[in-house]
Length: 38
Image 1: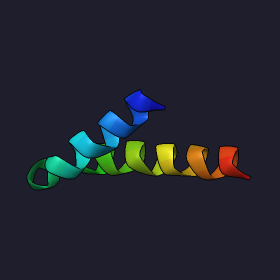
Image 2 (image 1 turned 180 degrees about the vertical axis):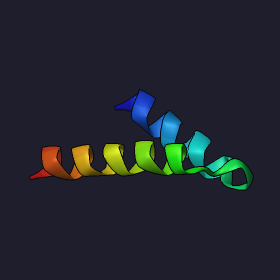
Image 3 (image 1 turned 135 degrees about the horizontal axis):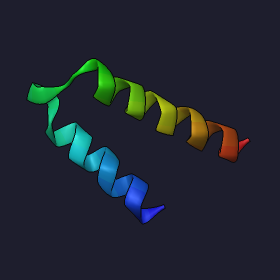
């Protein structure tokens, strides 16, 4: 879980270099977290 948190924080700090690949990874993690939450 800590690794995911670090990744999210890292992605949040790299807004200027945001790309479709980063958005895809972020969306994948979000979907996985929501699925695990359910």
